[in-house]
Amino acid sequence: MERVLAPANLRRAYQRVVSNKGAPGADGMTVADLAGYVRQYWPTLKARLLAGEYQPQAVRAVEIPKPQGGTRQLGIPSVVDRLIQQALQQHYLVAACGAETVGCVDSGGFKLAWRSR
Image (cartoon, rainbow, N blue to C red):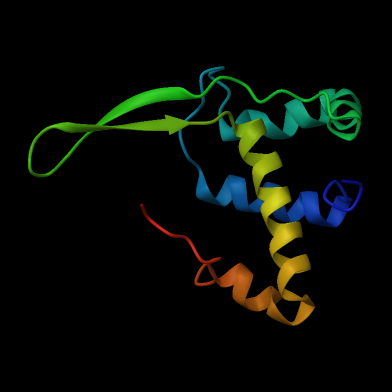
């Protein structure tokens, strides 16, 4: 987990979350609020993550209309949870695939094998 929380990995994760923009989660925090929040609460957040005590926040449920009618439900995590998820994803994809695949991971075209059921 120390490597996941390494400054270089977190900076990349932060940049990805900010560039993706996205709506606030259930807590109402926007991407613009993330830097200030992380500056203020990072020691506590990091300690909880390292101790295995971190609990993700509630996900905000939003109904999105479908083109053919009806709706589908979308869950929007908090921006802090998106930062942590991005840091984990970056670290474990690179670790699983080797350093030579970093360009592919960053391109957005690289995906692990997902199976729909």
